[in-house]
Length: 48
Image 1: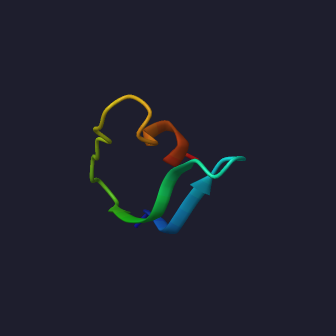
Image 2 (image 1 turned 120 degrees about the horizontal axis):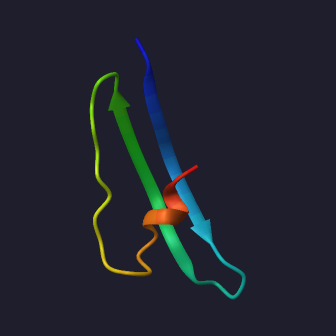
């Protein structure tokens, strides 16, 4: 059984702009997720 685990991921750009802060997520085999939010909130930054 496969699983995707993201554990306390953060991304801070030069200059101190915080894109993602301490995000944790577990996706089990067969699950489907959607990242929803406004433009610039860090959705694409979170993707590996």
